[in-house]
Image (cartoon, rainbow, N blue to C red; front, side, top):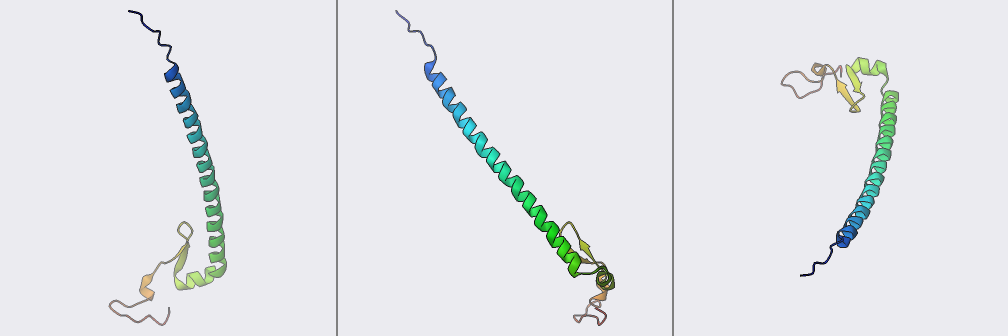
Length: 97
């Protein structure tokens, strides 16, 4: 019997094709990560602007009078002493608030 020498040419072409696909996926992932970085930077800029606008709108004297504080992380106004709003079991707002 005569055996043919298998030089692996078919496997070489498949591995070259897989390497090409891997490079394409690598570039797609890099583009996606770059876009995510830009979006995160834009989000942080907008969040800082909103925080500054809230500080400008609600002066510290007014916040202290209402018993409130501005939560910088979540951009929300938190009332520290909620007992000034309603009496226990009552649905009307207290006059001081």
